Length: 357
Figure 1 (cartoon, helix red, strand yellow):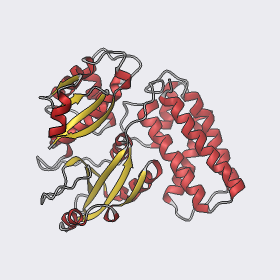
Figure 2 (cartoon, helix red, strand yellow; figure 1 turned 120 degrees about the horizontal axis):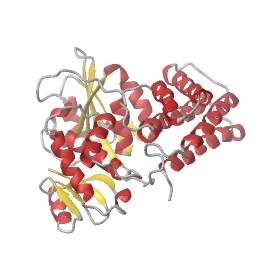
Figure 3 (cartoon, helix red, strand yellow; figure 1 turned 45 degrees about the horizontal axis):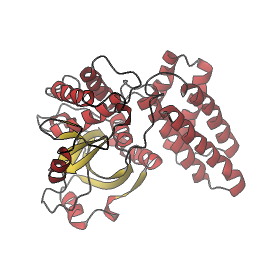
Figure 4 (cartoon, helix red, strand yellow; figure 1 turned 180 degrees about the vertical axis):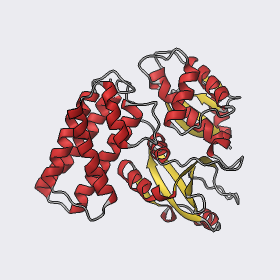
C-alpha cells in the first residue's frame, strides 16, 4: 500500500532527478525556475493538506514550516525547508532572479531529508493510503472587482450548454486581486494550465466577455483538491451582501463538504464523530466559513453516507465526480449509499458522485 507520504517522496525524488539531468542535458535559467516552482508549490500543498491538515490554508508557507515543530521536526530540519521556501519565493516574485544549478540541487536535496522524515510520521494524512484521484478539466472564469480589491473566480465543468447564463457553476471563491498572477503560476506548477480562449467554445467565452468586469478565463486539468487548496490559500473573505458570498451558494458548500468527507473517510483512524470531523476539515481546508447555517446538516448527512460504507472500503473512496441528473438517477439504483434525496451517492465503484442540473 502506497501512502500519501510515500507518494510525495516519489514526486520529490523526481524533482531532484530532473534538476540533476540538467547537468547532462544543459538548461536555460527558466528550466531551474520551473523545477523549483513545481517542487515549492507541491511541498506547500503537502504540508497543508497531508502533514498538517486542519489548519487554515491562508496561513503562509513559512507558518506551516514553523508548525512542523509540533510534529517533532527540529529547528535545523525546519531551516532546510525554509531555504527551499526562500528560493521558491525568490523565483516566484522576482522574474530577474537566477540561481546556479548546483546550489539549487543542494537546497532541494537538503529539503528532501526532511520530507523523508515527515513521510514516516503517523500524523495528519501522511500514512493514509494514496489513491490516484480522477483528474479532469475545469474551466475557470475570473471577474475583477477593483473597489473591493478581489477577483471572483468561477469554477465550472466543461459544458456544451447554450443557456444564456453559460455553463453550470460548481464553485465560486473570492481571492485577493493581487494574487491572480501567483495563482496562475502555482496552478501551472501542479497541473496543466492554458488560457481559456484557446479551448472554451466561442459562444461561452462571449458570455464571459459580455460583462465589463470580466478579466480572463483559464483551463485547468488536474485534481480538484489541489485546485481548491491553492485558491483557498489566497481567499479574500468580505462582508458582501446576502446571496453574493461563496458560502451563500448551496452547491459550492456541498462540493467543499463532499471533498472534506472524502478526506476524512481516508483517515487511518476513524474519528469518533464523523460529522464534526467533516465540518471542521471543510472549514480549515476548503474555505467553508464557520457558523454557516445549513452546513451542520450537510455534515451530518455526509457523515451518515460514509458510515454506510464498510470500514474496510472507506480508504478506497474517490471523488467527488459529477453526473447529470439522468445519469445520477441510473447510478442511484445500484448505489452503495445515498443521501440528500439522492443528490449525493457512492456508486458501486466506490466513487462519490454529485448530481448536477
